[in-house]
Amino acid sequence: MEYFPEVSEEQIRREREKARELRRSQWWKNRIATGICYYCGSQVAPKALTLDHVVPVIRGGRSTRGNCVPCCKECNNQKKHMLPVEWQSYLERLGKEPAD
Image (cartoon, rainbow, N blue to C red; front, side):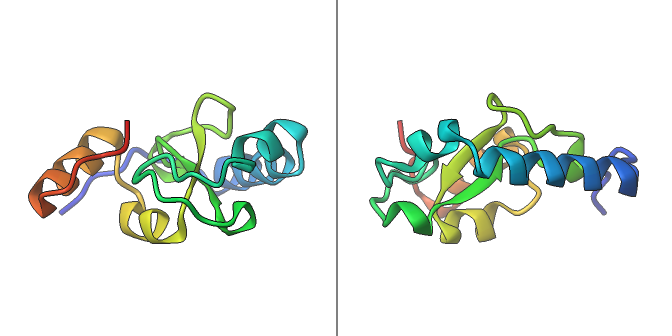
């Protein structure tokens, strides 16, 4: 059974709105311009990159520039609500190395 700190629906809603604002910003456009996934290093079309919270909102993460990274849909779907240390462990179990 996994434990998540209690994060209110209101807090989640606010953070998702902040994430939408970040996706509209020039900062985000610059981040996705290279088309490189933060996690696996894959090259994809910039518009195919998703915004991922390194520390997920449901785990208490915030929608800040320091916590949001561009990643491919595959990594985003696999990472889900994992914290960085959990994601690292998951990749190690799969025998994969994270991108530098």
